[in-house]
Length: 310
Ligand code: 13P
Ligand code: SF4
Image (tube, rainbow, N blue to C red; front, side, top):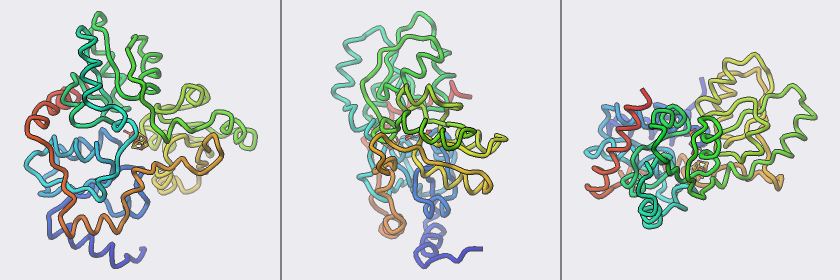
């Protein structure tokens, strides 16, 4: 058993005092993942937030995830270690422009990736995550045209998978768009048996090289159940912590970015640190708050997501 540091012990103490639950995404630093009550992908985290009996939700993830927890729990206190933990997808899809886009396509149904602001969710018909998007899109009547925002790579991947045409918002994830298919092939030369696993936010050229594509949790399950030994992981390397924990004998190589630099870490996710996690629990802030009408409107497409992904 590993010794806990003072700060880790304090966090555990505060968790009891506040009757708080700590939810963490796989891209958080390992120390945070190890302290969390639950680590998961966006869909699992929103399900946990929906079901929790805790009084306080401490969200170790990015802002749109904490907002989602608040929409699902308007009467609970939702804390986030750093309010600047944004997301390039959510940040580059402002509600005013999204509203104009919708208005220009009045017949379309707006299917929106959970990586979006609460305001954009409030203007949408159905929310999806990378783990339920395909299933949900297949349930939309064939004659309804679809608007998909804000990730065009995920959108393009879903069009291929489902055969449905969609109008795509031109957003990308600054982390996943940097992975290089060329660099991945160079690694394959060294490890010919390596399996390439990728998140659908990657560019098409990378997805074409992938042996398996899925959400963070799906990638984790894949390596756990696979009989292969070496994996090239084309998503944020935070997930490798759980992969190594459950498969200590397997080898995980973080896919390199185009420039060869180690810039495949999500700078937003990494805004959260153990110190900031402790401070936000001690001070009970920063707290995530949202206007009542946004909460009410954003809840509708989120509930639809839960209904359609059962
Ligand atoms: P997942 O839902 O697969 O965990 O993805 C979240 C995310 O932000 C990917 O970059
Ligand atoms: Fe957003 Fe990309 Fe970071 Fe995920 S990895 S939170 S999509 S910027």
